[in-house]
Length: 313
Length: 319
Image (tube, rainbow over all chains, first blue to last red; front, side, top):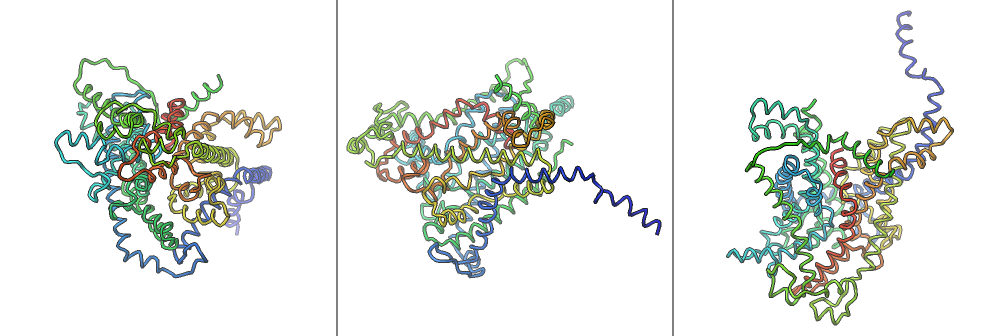
């Protein structure tokens, strides 16, 4: 009995024994806090939470905007599974993401190293950031013109070199690589800046030790810079991969998904299903699948690359 | 005076998070081919970035008919202001067709107004309401605070396309299609990023001033408006700038909700202008003049506040 009472006593105060003055203050803060987050809460509930739930619900229905949605169970999903256009859209999107991320990451690391070691000037950083600040639509139209088959300057140079002209946006083979290239051009400076910020956070003394040990620049890069940069790289990769899975503007303005289905990326397909064929149920199911894929990608990247850990500690 | 000290303070607090931004080591070394090679690469990168913009200008100042015969000429072919006049609505349809336009004018001034209204509404709302929420998440103590914040943050992961369809249906049901309210509402109250960005700054502000004000009997509303907001002017301005540029460039949502002439924004207008341009012989100078003019507001903002944007990218992206 006595031992029980002794054990119970120290455990009690943290539950109920806080000074009452303090808990009154907490409740007072709660009221004012609710007032302060009220607008954001409305935005969150009305434009994030409810749409998320509604999107999932609609994916199990047949809904053509006229009339009410009718529940059809998992029919949309089974239909997607045997939908050749969906698999094509997925293949095209994955091809785009691979090209875009591959080139963008390598170029951005190179640019970041250049900014870090050679040219720290804000002017150069600003110049490289410029394409990122201009709208996708503007970038798309600009390159649509520069890569034009007849009059585009790039094809002028190609034919001046004695090579055959390339129908960049007009051929099935080139459409996706071209769109990937345009977006690499737009994003490389931005990605480089993110990596540059990561490089800045690597302490100098690590390099000084490597220098004393007589490590070559290549060795230093692979054994020090890359491992220490990993947390930043993982973050950058997660953000850019998720972003590029949702490529739309460039495709919509240049090829519209063509020629044939060559550049119909997944978001283009969702858009066409919803607004071209007004099949909102099917389009919702497609976006649920896209959402799941993106969540998986983020999860795998974080796990596989151990994004949360840093070697600095 | 006060703004300059504020911006310096922000840069310092940003630097404290991502590391020293300007840790320049003075090095005097003899000629080094490695270094020279690196500089050549830097110059190439800058040229690759800038040259297309110059090509845009060159095309916009050319006459359509001469473009065909002078495709590779580096200077404007048959210099003409016609394309800009066409875009700004200073040319009659007949004149436009004669110069290779489609005759369908881009209603530039209207779209410009719409872009300004849309971007300003969303930026003002988003920054203000997010600041309020960030205050509650950083300066107030209440049960469940961190859990609610985590839930808010989690929505960062939801891809925009996923909420776009249901949001479109909601806006449609509310009868707000083709209205500024319909365009702006989903962005006006908050984004997880905006709250997160401001919360970081609010957390680093000193409590002393606030506590002194509290002893004087000031309430939270007064503290928020008279202490927190003025002290966070620099991060608020940076966030507003980033948000404004982002909204100005937005295409997908305005394409869904704002197809009508009266609310059509510049990005959507450019897409329509392109699709109206003759397929066989597109109005290239007109298109390039239009894109250039549409980019000018962002370019001006960038020239004015470029340093701020560049320095904030590292901070905003990493944290």
